[in-house]
Image 1 (cartoon, rainbow, N blue to C red):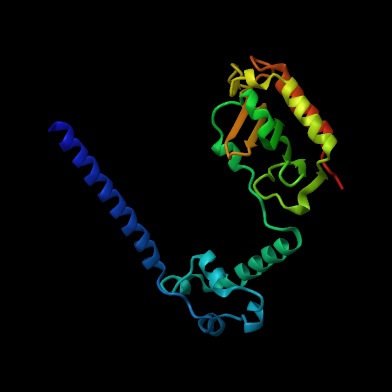
Image 2: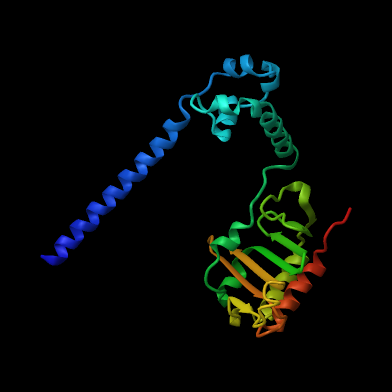
Length: 246
């Protein structure tokens, strides 16, 4: 009887939670009101119909989050935002859509097993020391390599491509990763000196062809418990696929 009551209580709480979430979503939709007619924008800004040529007006307004309830307080921003929106459209036309590889780090869990090594489709190597951060992204599904300095992995497109992966590169990567002993690594290695932890570090992340993500990292005092092979693997990959400074 007690178990039955508990089960009923859980079910009721689940329904209440779903109802609350649904109402919250409806409230957000109601807060911005109805779609704003383009004529209203044209009448209250310096924009003309020509400015919206080639632009999906509804998609633009939805992305900005504007409706009849909030458009007046944002009207002065619309021309500038439209210019940015069109710049992004042109950038995507020329270089394709941005790819966000940073999600691999957020979704990472567990470690690699031997059988996973043949199923790697994306590799990310990052090495930072103070303000200098170097990163290489290798996407084996497209054979594109993105290598550079700074934070760019959340917005990779064809303008960032620095090399194409060859069959020789694939074989080299397979052998180098296998020889690193990566399947015996822990996920995290941290230095013990509070003054240096986070100042320097190395990370290597992978996405497998089943969608799973795995990452390894070391921060703080170099080689404090970290396998030397981690630094060597990252260094070798970066040397194989250097940044393009042109």
